[in-house]
Amino acid sequence: MMFRSCPYEKEVMQALKAGHWPDGCDRELRAHVETCASCSDLVLVTGIFQQARIESVREAQPGFAGLLWWRAQLRSRNVATKKISAPITVAQIFAWLVTLLSMVVLVASQYRHGLHWASWWSEFAPFRALHALLLAASKLDWNLVSVAPSLGALILLSGVVVYLVTARQ
Image 1: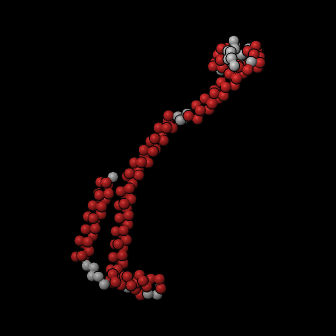
Image 2: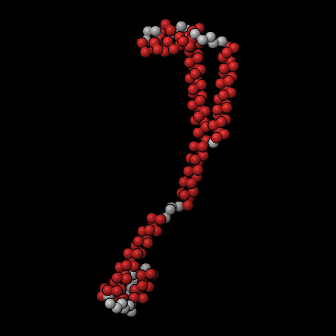
Image 3: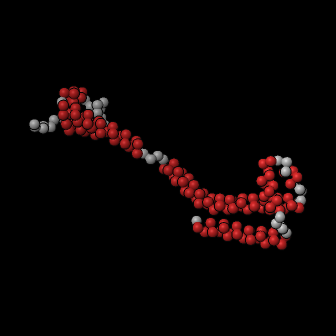
């Protein structure tokens, strides 16, 4: 099999590269491409490659620079927020536990010395277990001499916990 090039092949190639095919060409060249197998294959293959290039360029465009900058800033702010909020979350959980413990101590103290809540709660069946727990806690002797140093140690311990959590980050 012998491959021969068409004399119009260079003209067809120039028209394809310039983007003049088929509307910007003369009738003689269009008529030749319809009859010549080599030129029609050239037009077909080049058209497919040009279309694929246009589609790949369209898909590859990342967008506006301002949008990319805004997304990068948002991402960096989210990372910074997560770094900052982790120790605060630990400190909040610790504070909630301390508050809950303080409330239990206050209720036990009031239960023993104050409002006689045992007479109110004894009527409700679900609170009988809580009643037994509060009765056991009320047998402890809570006075100012033991409560003040305990609260001081608790405050000092909470400060140390928050410092250690933030120092690891």
